[in-house]
Image (cartoon, rainbow, N blue to C red; front, side, top):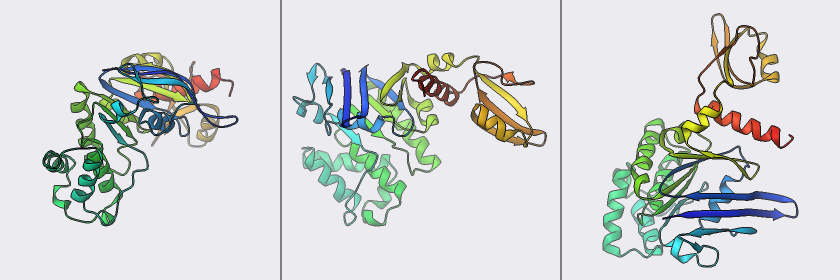
Length: 294
């Protein structure tokens, strides 16, 4: 099982590129896809889901070009887009039955799978209520269920935990971890803790280009020695914010404890700190922008 992205670029207008020369090869496991807003994550997801075609380059599933022959991938694909819509007059059972029919699932198998998934996403008690009355988080759980209907070998989820409460987020993280051993899972999100809890590998995109692809441990190592804790006064905080990249601040009775990402100590009293994955992500994005001359 292999998904290979080979030199993919996507141009929307004459000089607007969503992706530039993007290459990546994936085998079973969870890939956490991180990047700033507008970096190209959703563009990549749509190409991998065969909704959009690349301007240049190819994507192959087990050696087959998905732009030329998409049906082989579509039959084993589960996809939850960022903007997931539902039919408000249908119940979860009716909606999932409709999606199952569109995917070609047999009726008896579909009914059993729907029952299983509604329990999995904690919606069994809401199975006969109309989707129009659901909260955003409940609709997102229906979206997760529809993506899993055909027990996909490639699962693509774009911002899947948006709108979920903390308990639901933990449930979904555990679900992804359970699924990862036998399929390729691509988790695109801006929530770094979701990636930290589930990903076996991480890819970071900046301005449509792949800037990092490695294990979480290796990405953390790249930021080692570049994260500092520095206690400053409230009066000095605006200057620190304008002069340094901060990953967090905590107000205390003796000032403001800042986490600063910098190649060298930011000032007197600053001490080196172990990087978190969020620190490492911000460092990678900042370095990519600097190397690009911005």
